[in-house]
Length: 335
Image (tube, rainbow, N blue to C red; front, side, top):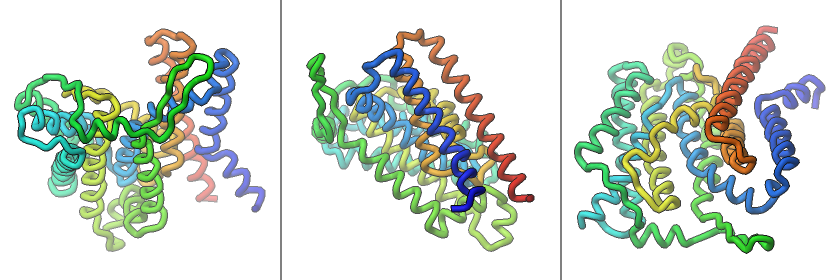
C-alpha cells in the first residue's frame, strides 16, 4: 500500500471516530472499572438497535440529496396502530400482523413523502416536516393517546427469544440481548452492498452529488428519490415495531424528538448533509459514539443537563470534523 493512501486511511473520518471511541472508553473505564464488562457491551448493543436502524434510513435519504425529519412521527403511528387494532379486536395477535401493518404504514408515508418531493418538487425539509405534523396530529385525533403496555402473543414470543443471556457473577443480575439485534446487523450488510455494489446505490450517490448532472447522464432521478423515501418509510415501520417489542410499550409520542440525534450520528459518521457521500461503517460508528456517550455518562453519575451538553459538544465537533474532511478531499481532487 502506498504511503499517501495509507496516511489517508489513517486520517479518514471512520478512523478518527474509532480513535475517539477508544479514548472515550479508556477514560470512562479508568473512572468506572465496571464499564469494561460483558454487561456494558450488552447494554450498549441493546441501546443502539433503534438508533442504528433509524440511522440507516436517514443515511440513504441524505446520500440521495434529501433529508427526512418525519421518521419519528411515522414510527409512532406505525407502532401505535397495530396495537390499537388488536385492542379493538380488529387484528391478529401474531407478529406477522403487527410487523406487516407497521411496515405498510411506513411504506405509505414514505410514498407520500416521495410524491411531495419527487413529483411536486417541494423541498425535502418542508415536505417531511409537513408529513411529521400530519402523522402525529392525525394519529392523536383519530386513535387517541392511550398507552399500550402489554404485548400480543406473537410479539411476546419474540421478546422472550434472546440471542445472549449473561449472568453477572458479582451481582447475579441477568443481561439479555434479544434476537432482534440481528436486524440492524443484517440490514447494514444489505445496505452496504446496495450502495457499493449496485447501480441503484451508485445512482443514489450520483443524484445526491449533482442531481442535474445525474439527470443529464440518463439516471431516473425521480425513481431513485422514490426508492430512498419509500425505503426509509418502510424500514422505519419495521424499526418502530422492534421498539414496541423490546420496550413492551406503544405510545403515540414515544419517538418524537429523536430526529436530530439520528441526523447528527449520520453527519458525525461522515455523511455529507448536502448529499452524495457517506458510508454504512461511518454511520454505525457515529451511532456507537452517541450511544456510548449517552449511556456511559449515566454510569459516571453526570446530571442529565450535562449529558445533553456533552452530546451537543460531540455533535458540534463531529460536524466540524466532517466539514474539514470534505474540504481536504476536495483539495486532494483538485491536486
